[in-house]
Amino acid sequence: MDGGALRAVLLAALRSVVSLRKETHRGRRLTFDKHVAPVYRLLEVAHADYVGGFRATRTAIIGSSAPSEVIDFLRDVRRGALMMRGKALVTIDFMLDDPYRGRISLPPGWNSAKGFFEAARAYLYGATAPAATSWYSDYIRFVEISAIHLPGDCWEQDVFGNDARADLLSAIERVLDRIEMSFRLVTQEYLLAERNLVL
Image 1 (cartoon, rainbow, N blue to C red):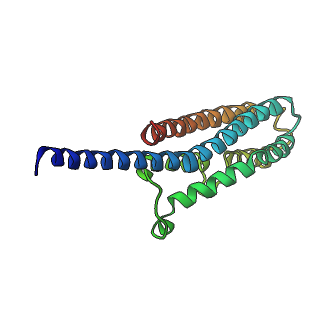
Image 2 (cartoon, one colour):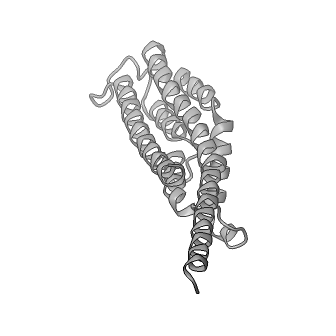
Image 3 (cartoon, one colour):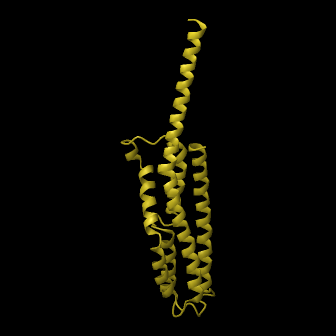
């Protein structure tokens, strides 16, 4: 093989490698744009709803005359971004569900996005109860149990030396801290997926 033919073969091979790399990058970018970014946008809405809802609940507790008012308020607030949470969870569960992955081909760069979907699932199932449907569910149960088991007007009297209103406000602060830490992990995984799939 002469020098010109060898050069042509090497040039063709190099073009093929560059073309494959561009195609792979395009596929990874598409994975980010179609699978990762839309779920993150849904989670941003849900997160803003959670934070705003718990802050409004804190205000409701301070201004309420009985725990039952807070329970009713929480049930209304919980409905806020329910559709966004549900839509994100369906997508996340589908992407992480092992039986489906055997039947569909995974998008290019799946391993770079898997950590994001796992963090997102953990965020949405962030409440401590295994069957929790939202961060609100556990807190509503906490307020309901407080209202049931604290006799009389538990806002006005100390039961066993505890201030029920202060306990509920403290619980809100703990939930807000947990939500923020969990969402921070989702954001870190999102940025990592973006770096690996797009940049």
